[in-house]
Image (cartoon, rainbow, N blue to C red; front, top):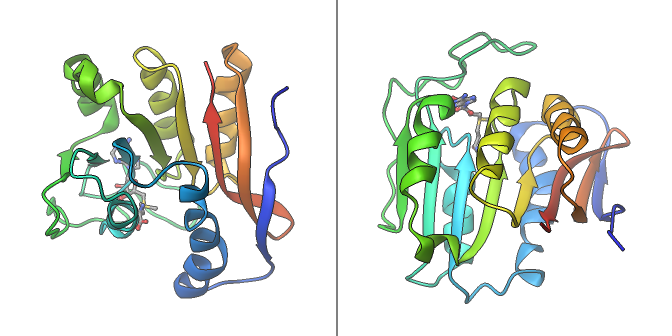
Length: 205
Ligand SMILES: C[S@@+](CC[C@H](N)C(=O)[O-])C[C@H]1O[C@@H](n2cnc3c(N)ncnc32)[C@H](O)[C@@H]1O
């Protein structure tokens, strides 16, 4: 029986600044991910939407195995489309990738639509055999939908984290789930203004 009702680990209402957003909505979920995935195991972590690298660094600190791999996909020149209050180019880092000391973290620059197909085609079986975690934080419907469909060509089962399921990432998640027959569980969620926001779950097949 699929678990479609995640455990609600926090909820907040009203406007939040970046710091309280992280503290109240993201970290409450992120901190509990190792309760579901043994943090000593080898993971293949792929993050879609990296910006300054806060989230990829956070997960690399949690999953300490030297055999774990962390890939962060981003244009590093900002959003390819405008979104609500954000203009195209929001989150621009002039093409510079974040500074990281952990050599397990690698950045893959460019549009997902251009970089992901080749990346997945060349991904070694040994990497695919690790526990796979996919962190979706691109905000946009187009970017999220593309990523879900492309991943599905190569990977059946994986854990997922959505950063903002309350908006367009949700539309992509719904469209993908309607189009495919994949089954999934939802484990954890934080709520913002009475809707799910940061959500952790797993595609099972
Ligand atoms: C909200 S930010 C990521 C924040 C980051 N995860 C963090 O925790 O700080 C969203 C990022 O997604 C990237 N992005 C969105 N769509 C993309 C696409 N199709 N290809 C590459 N990067 C994309 C943007 O450039 C932006 O840096």
